[in-house]
Image 1: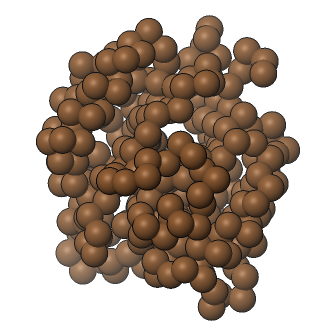
Image 2: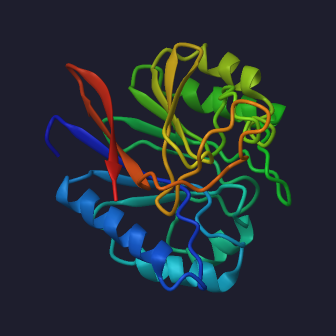
Length: 252
């Protein structure tokens, strides 16, 4: 690995069996682009499938069977923890019980993934035990540049729908991040559009969906979560020790 570290973040893939291969095709295109850009790591930040079905996870497993770089999974509100575990037993970094939260330490940038989904619900929650886990985990490597990943954005976006189904414990999350200055980026998905925000000192990057893009509803009377003609895509996060992070939208 050179002095440059590249993380390909692909989010909200929503793999389906009834879309004539569109969701799988877009995921494959994103993986091919990640290969072309020589990504060091690929992270799928939730809503891996559309309906929490075993056949959808089987299709996802086939699509990512030979990734161009080490590939890591985390759940979103459309996912089932048990099916993720049973479909991807070779992903040994995933805890075998409880939340699917974990840390990846072997790269120049540490990656800490927080599972804050609520089974059967669309919103996210960061419980006090999860916050304590995050605090302990971050405290172990205070001197190493770190990305924290979760599915739901931890800040208000002012969208009339997505703030209602977002992370309900954004201030608690930010209070943990504030204690760990090595956290250089927070990355997430869920909104199906690129959005920028802040959590304590750390910039937050919301990735688009690789499958479809939602519009923005800020005022009463505007359509709620309309699908738009904007490009789906993914985010390439580039880092060097000298320059820190830059994050790039990559259209499909």
